[in-house]
Image (cartoon, rainbow, N blue to C red):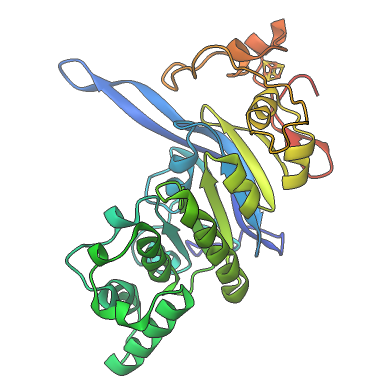
Length: 330
Ligand code: SF4
């Protein structure tokens, strides 16, 4: 059987993640034996349909970036399945992995750290194309110039170096580079959180325009709920390595079901000062993913916690069409 056996019968799903786990081993003692694990991603399942944007949101350290990197196979999954475009890519390696990498790309939080400062922008954007295709130099240059124009950079950017640009422009270079291979899926990991607020919406609008033009599917990772709201069709909320709620954007913002999502939404400032809004203050800190609480990992901070919450881990289940939540209240 082929390493890339056809797995998904659902036609419009581009990415399916099933029971994904990414644990980082902790070693200790004289023999450096494994004595535990950081459960960075602990059994998450979701899917993304072609052309849609799924926002993945949660506090820093909740595992959302690790999930993105594991899906791209930049990190090895500990368990679970990643099905991309109908093929199980969880364990593919070598040339099969290289071939699939054409189809998914990452946009990073810090564009400066992800761009080689010694390379001209023209070379940075053409590098992935050179790695995958044979092109003559004139064709390649025309292609790169077109990409630079599409992301809103002047053509003379081709001959400049990353340090000659502002933060927003550098993120545009990163976006042009991620588009160079015409990917199907882009995982954007906090793509605007390092930028000035004044340029954030420009970059977000650019990503939306490019999504339409290049028929892209996005996994959009961010801690800022207003940024996620602007970009996403559906939203998944993560807490301590797990997915606690997944629903359409409007349902998450108008009728959040999970007590953690309710607290996150309540913390968004209300632009109209005449409207009163209850702010739910979460008590305590996020527990350690090395030794997460038993049962529902949110129970030490949950104002609705019941005795069973300490013992039984709630499954993520559909409580309304398209609305899944992991909580014993439902
Ligand atoms: Fe709160 Fe229990 Fe629901 Fe967890 S399962 S969110 S502790 S009510």
